[in-house]
Length: 485
Ligand SMILES: Cc1cc2nc3c(=O)[nH]c(=O)nc-3n(C[C@H](O)[C@H](O)[C@H](O)COP(=O)(O)OP(=O)(O)OC[C@H]3O[C@@H](n4cnc5c(N)ncnc54)[C@H](O)[C@@H]3O)c2cc1C
Image 1 (spheres, rainbow, N blue to C red):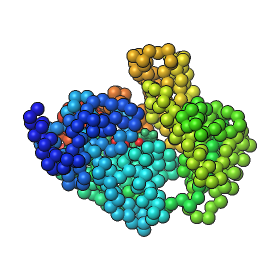
Image 2 (image 1 turned 135 degrees about the vertical axis):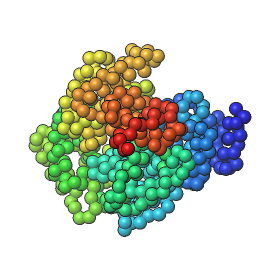
Image 3 (image 1 turned 30 degrees about the horizontal axis):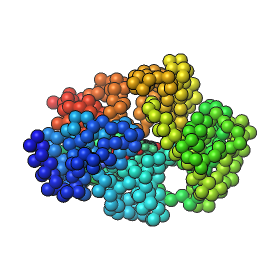
Image 4 (image 1 turned 90 degrees about the vertical axis):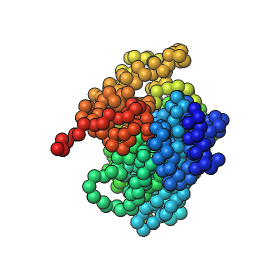
C-alpha cells in the first residue's frame, strides 16, 4: 500500500496536480464508456501532456510491474479502455495530447497528437481544403489514437478504406517506455516488414500511440444523400451492385436500416418524422460525393430510375440541401440512441461477403428466432463493407438477472451461423474483453502461436492493456515459427 502511494506521489511530481487523478469522484468519467458499462476503479488516471511524459509514466510502470490501460475517448464498444475490477491498473488518458502538429495540403497529410478528437482533425483538414475521410457516429468524442488502436471503420469505408489505409506514420511509446518514432509522410514505402500496421487494431496491447501522420483526401465540393425504401435485403444488395457501377466510384456511404430502426430513431428524437408516406421493411441511406464538375444530382436520379424500374427501390427521399442531408443522416445517428435506451441487448459487429448478406440475414434470423421466438432482431450496418450489426433485444419476459446468459446463448448460435458463412465476429469494433472468448475459440494453433509471439515480443511482462484480445498475464514466449538455428 505504501509502495503504491509512493509510486503515485512520484507520478504527481512528474505530471503535476492536474496530471494525475486520484480522487474516486474525479475518476468517475474515466471508468464509464459510451454504452454506460463500467468494470471497476483504476489505481489512478495519468493525464500526461506530451510524448515524453507518456514515455516516463510507462517506463515507471514497466519497472514497478504496474498494468496500464491506454484510454482515448472511451467510445469503444468492447470494454477495451475500461480499467478492470481489481483496482490495480493505471489508466493513461491521452486527452491532453490534442494538438495538430502539422498539415501539408500538397502532400495531403496531417500530423497529429494521438489524443486529437476525430471531429477536430476533420475540421483542421477542411481549413486547408482537404478532408480526413474517417467518419463515424462517435467522431465528436473518439480520438485518433483510439481510431488507430481499433482500426476504426465507419461510414465511408467503401470509398476510403479503414483506418489502416489512412495512416502513413506513427509515434508509439512501447511497453517498456522507449519511444518508436516513425512519423513518415511517405505515400510509398516498401522497406521490409510493415511494423506500423501491427499497431493498427492492436487495441492498446502493444504500446501507446502518441502521434500519427494521416492521409488526407480532397474535400468534396458537393454531395447528394438519399434515403430509400426497399422490399427486401436482396433488393438492397442488388441496388448496391448497381450503385457501385453507375456512380463512378463516387459512392461514399451505403447503409442498411431496417424499419424498426426508423421507429427507434423517431422515438429517440422528437423532431424526426417518418421520412416517406408509407413504411417499408428495409431502407438504404446512401451518399455520393465529388470534387469538381460532376452532375451528382442527375447521376443519382438515373440510378433511382433504374432501381425503381427493376423494382428494387419502392420510394425515396432525396436531400437537395446540406440541411436536408443532415436530417436524413439524423435517422442513422438517432437510431443508435433509440437502441441504447432499450437497455441491455446483444451488440454484434460482424462481417460476411457482401453477396452473402441476404442469405446470412435470413439464416441467422431463422436460427435466433427458433431459439428465442419473442426476442427482437435489429440488423443494420455498413452493408457496402459487408458489415452488419446483427443486434438482439431480449424478450421482455426474460428476468433482468437472466438476460446476460440468454443473450450469450443467442450470440453463440449467431456465431455458429457466421462460421458457416466464413464471416468475422468482429468487423470493426475489435476484440477487447467482450469478444475474447469467441475470438480465441476460432484461432487455429498456428494463429495462436503467431499472435502470442507478437505480444511476447512487444510486451514480455504483459502489462500493456492486459486481458484485452489475449488473456491477462505474461504472454507465453512463442516458439519460433521459423526455426532459425
Ligand atoms: C455511437 C457510436 C458509433 C460508433 N460507430 C463506429 C463505426 O461506425 N465504426 C467503428 O469502427 N467504430 C465505431 N464505434 C466504436 C468507437 O467509436 C471506435 O472504436 C473508436 O475508434 C474508439 O476510439 P476512442 O478514442 O473512443 O477509443 P477508446 O474507447 O478510448 O479505446 C478503444 C481501445 O483503444 C485503446 N486505445 C485508445 N487510445 C489509444 C492510444 N492512444 N494508443 C493505444 N491504444 C489506445 C484502448 O485501450 C482500447 O483498447 C462507435 C461507437 C459509438 C459510441
